[in-house]
Length: 141
Figure 1 (spheres, rainbow, N blue to C red):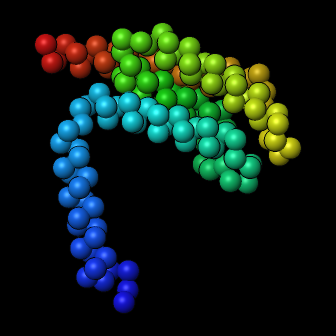
Figure 2 (figure 1 turned 90 degrees about the vertical axis):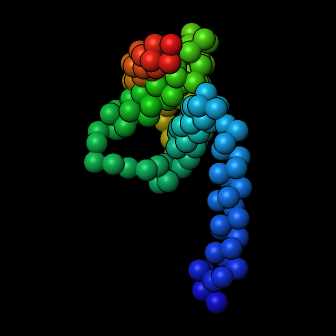
């Protein structure tokens, strides 16, 4: 039997049905929080993994760093609009802390300039997210 056997398809259909039923109870705010924490978890994993496991693109590494934190900033700003300053403080402390934790790995190096690049990306992301959440709030009103 291959991976697409009848039993496997039935289990997949049941799982999709369960997810669809569960999703009907999830609010957009809950989904944005899940997205924000997922982006953050990916950043932590990539930052602390061995250098050989780090995903690479054709972009300069500082663009990758800023882009990851830009995405986190947007996601956290939309997920936590009432606590945006706490969320921003968390991301800034996390960026600095993750750079410091890289010092504990023999194959990684944390640098102040890398942390500043990440913080700049996060701040721009929070600005974009703040604007987006206000636009969405006005549309709902």
